[in-house]
Image (cartoon, rainbow, N blue to C red; front, side, top):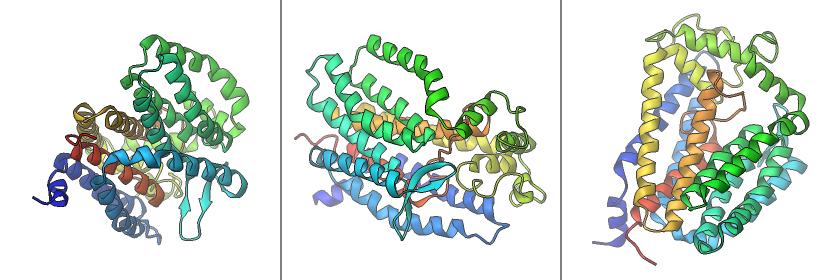
Length: 366
């Protein structure tokens, strides 16, 4: 059998089916959130799907071990993009985190996260015999520069995603638990300093509103309160698709974010508790399938890459859904494969391609 055909037949079909199902549902979700408007975000999302699927296929079929050559250049490109964002980026919702490339808006923090995962995975696999503290310090050096640049933007949501990603990779990489516990305690102790001196006023307001939604119901607490009302009003089965007089249709949920950051609030109102449970269950099954790929990886590099991807997807899901139900403060993090956004969809499908590559090439020894 030709090697190319063998690779095609070697896909993890469960993960592929779940990915395609969630992506299709995402197009429906975007339409259901914006059908009453003249915007055609759902059509744009279809175009992005058509553009990104060949990229996903290409990444899947190429041996993931290419990162031994490509990780460092990609990491440097991510750093350069973050620096360029500080100088030329567009300010959106108080953060200078987007670059206008003419044909699309691009968020460099997403590229930097992907590059960081690959670079940490390469470092951990190449220097696994070093003392754990040296490995921990090396990972800290790799992560530190992009993480600080993202915080400066300031993009708190993207910065938070790095934390479970790095901790998960360090754990799988065999870093002793005492080091990880010490790292967590150090991080928790730094929270008051970060909140008081590292965040802008509007970000501090979001955290205070998260702790007490009634603090500023007409201002900083408006979006969270309306999200809670929308999800709660959906009840057990929801109000239904294109139901009249929903909070979304009446404009109580801000129209600028219902199709991306707060799409789960729209789905909760339309499809209720049952719809929310089904969506979360499909996402959970997707993550469990990805964890199985971590367990079956053929070498340490593949295991670290897959772990980083799993933790990145989990962090986005937890933050996005959590901020709509007052489990997490509002951070502006999209829901993978569901929220509107071309550049994020591209990065997400590249990540799924890496998972498939780890699975397809797990029996290839180099």
